[in-house]
Image 1 (tube, rainbow, N blue to C red):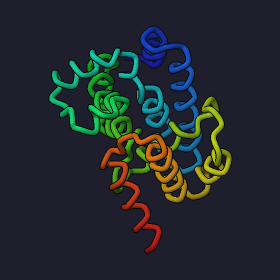
Image 2 (image 1 turned 135 degrees about the vertical axis):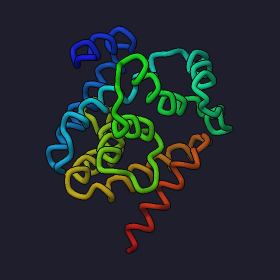
Image 3 (image 1 turned 180 degrees about the vertical axis):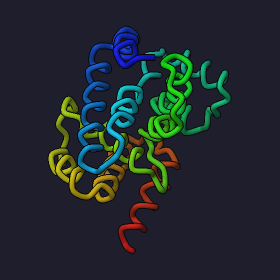
Length: 190
């Protein structure tokens, strides 16, 4: 599927605010790819597709997870906002024609991260957090600066901030987020 077709279909399937966020992530990911020597086209496409499953109502997301054999873990049931990232690679393939495994992997871990992320995975994870349309939160401007100078420190900051936010609201933290945080915290010590 051509990029213009993908944009049109996404704009029809996502709320306007979610579509605007998606475009912001795509351009931020492309800028980061330029800065770090990653594939610009893949970064842009991963940014465009990262929330492609978010337009489905929650019940439909659950049905699709069952259809694709995606486990509805305790964490996903308690924090259903995690479902879209597990589902997105399948929707990207079946509805938007993405056959690129690197892009699929980057969109799958854009919410929780994962230990040992590739450059593209890091870029999409960070771009989702820092894109220009994001609501201002404490520390966001310093995270944005760090994104272009020390990606691993930036990841750590985002993960720590996310876990603190979820804990402060008594929300479930996905084990993958904790694993990712521990991984990069230990990497930082070496």
